[in-house]
Length: 280
Image 1 (tube, rainbow, N blue to C red):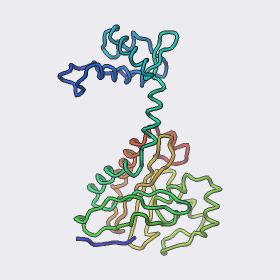
Image 2 (cartoon, rainbow, N blue to C red):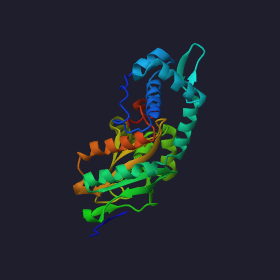
Image 3 (tube, rainbow, N blue to C red):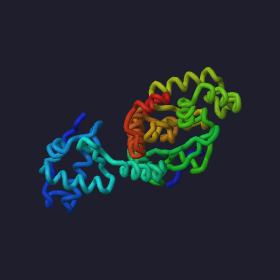
Image 4 (cartoon, rainbow, N blue to C red):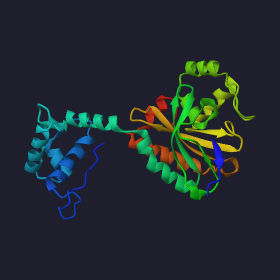
């Protein structure tokens, strides 16, 4: 790592005409409207309500629902009510299994780099270290902190590493302290267990973390968590910059970008992340 100088019921809009719709086949548009209504219901819904919410004639809605039931996209219960079918769960599981946090993060990372002009990193935990798996930077942005993809650093010395420690069980943190001895790299490094716990408590309260020249003198970082659909911390998104250039107003941009990536991974609620001890 170095500084380089390169040069409840939500109403659905009534269906538009085929000419005005981006969906050329009208029956597909209508099927999507029905699925959208069903997706926002906690309980099974009668045909009449579905027709009202979509603006479809009852007979039209019934005909399309029959096809969706045949394909297992919709389930018809004995009382004549409708709900989403298991086929959607199967397809959703396939999509989830193919999602790669690195691939999902690339475009948002580039956007964040454009806004800040500094290097943006994506890191994951591997044992007692973080591993840098992706970065966004530009040779046209002047002097930047460039971290090598595949590079590693101790958890307690990095902003992303502190995110992972903050969601760890206290016994796991204690074991980490015993294994590593909290070896320092600079005069700013946290080398005492009590000081580390204070730092982790701050991360839990604010939802982001800092590296104040703790890994490398002259370099400061801020990081926010990237969460999956279960609210589990999957990666850390960080901005690394020369110490004098890091700006506090970037924190909000960082959090919004991390939330954008999390949403692409299926994360929808703050409750799951809070359960793990960190605010997303």
